[in-house]
Image (cartoon, rainbow, N blue to C red):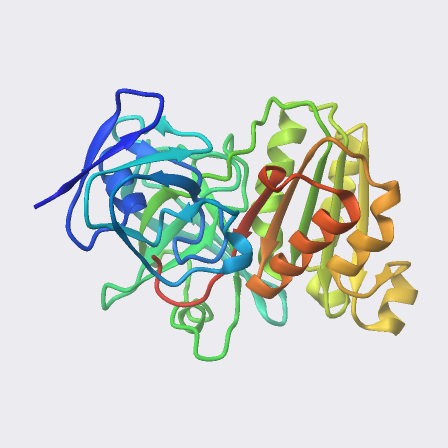
Length: 334
């Protein structure tokens, strides 16, 4: 028997089947709330849960605000009421399953492929900056990758794929040729960033966490945004900043722009004039210089995002609700 989930302060109610998470049930019902990883790590889907009993799956304690639960891990045993930070109805047909054609496959770094895919003739990909797609593998498993192109470039998508030892999809990427087809579904994710907001924005990313940041910043540049934007991009060495030249475009397009490269290799950091150390150390070191009263968007591996979250709270006194995370969690898509 399904349980009824009500959104506090509204007349919206949807069913949740036994064993189904609240987030999955909401998405199936056409209700979208903030979410990203769907694996209990990023904390984006945190919400207050009222009344009734539920099963709590594996969650990251530091990503779960006090008095809230992660909806991607909550499986109700009774009717419940939830109070998400925001919600909206999905447009009918907003999510599509498509066969995309490989247009170009190049190496941006020894361990990063830039995969340019084209949609079928006459079709467009409708998505918001920072969202991701799921690639379906031959055996039906899925892998998630952020769209690196901005929404106005809607006749195709660009993916940044890091080559990971044992990675199911990254192992296939090297052999993909122009004309090859990939089965994908898009869009997924809700980063909850208002593109029209005027407050300061700090973006922090590591490695290919640059992909959704690129989409966000290209979108702001297209909109001729005047908001203060700072990007801190970290890597082990210079090769990890695989599209460094692209930052010059934002310097020209965004009037209140600052870029900080953070490299763990001391010699290369010195040669590039970059910050020597990890991105969370850069946030702490530069905290007094960073604009306050805005939002932080952070993307990368779970330990990096966790460290940056702590740095923003400790050194910048950033309210938890202004920290938006897109965490790259390996393995099958949630």
